[in-house]
Image 1 (cartoon, rainbow over the protein chains, first blue to last red):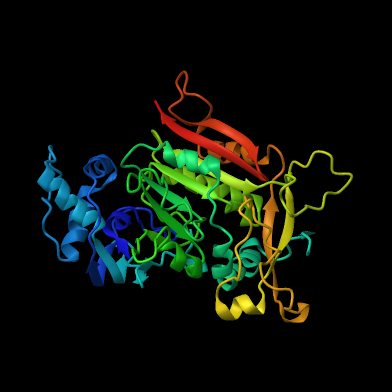
Image 2 (tube, each protein chain N blue to C red):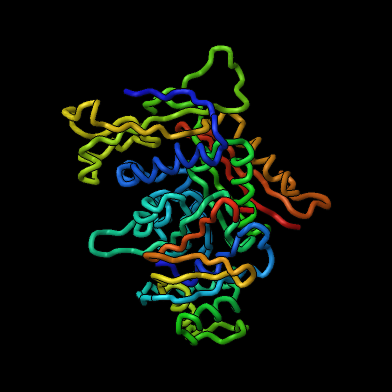
Length: 123
Length: 295
């Protein structure tokens, strides 16, 4: 099932929608929690690639408020574990992701986000 | 053995791909997946050399064969698989799972031509045996641009693999070559047949695996008994653009230059570019590895 790490990478690509098209907003989500092995080096090194604000907002929308709103200067083990949980252990099984700019709706079904567009929507 | 035939793209390229690529893969997904299990060495090496914590895109992941790699350091990098075939994605979603311990992979249903990623978000991108299904020069070039757009401009690594006109002796297919051709700078558009036997279609699984030396397994061979009659075996023609020598490198350079990237090592006052780390031919494929740089 798709996790928040992937959500942190997805942007709207409807024709003409080029600003404020990230992050997509979760709506009507059904989630499942599934444990994943914790690799502190992995999480530490992932950090620079993340959009922290987007991640915190998405986590909140799926019911997790464990992360601080601002990215901390130092990541201790406790925070790394929380980050690991948010990124890799929350699986979105069903729901939609809505573009904040053009309101296009991308469905998630059976854990797979559908990013396909109709022909007239493609830039 | 059914042979590869030359084809000419009659419709618009998107419609052509819908009929001769996407529809076919949806039909043959499970059988196709069972013949695609052996990772290719150059790709294995590329993934093994990635630093811990890197995130990448497998653009055209198919059955997700590369998502579990590197096997010696599982979980050290995260590869997200994108594919156009929902049926193949259902398989890719659990790629690398051992019996009883299902693993979840990140997969997205989408089109490699689209720009659905936050710019520069990925550390690496691989495109294996995918862009040769795109039915025009412009589309193939755009697909390479999408790879360059989605990786970090400062350190992004890209690896692209496509089928070559020049097949090695272990390949079971031969590409029709016009005697007058000589240098073939533009590659060849062909149909490569896939035979889906009725037994496979009903059971959903083939009887026997392909031999292990299938770096590029011949899709027109099927491991089932000969009692299946010709009349009951549907044959699907998959569209491929087979690349000529030098064509992938040229296409890559044109894609990069079209985005304002310099091709070569960083020097002087150039601000952003891409370096060709290696480009070669291996077992009936051309491949190219790139590294982005920013000064």
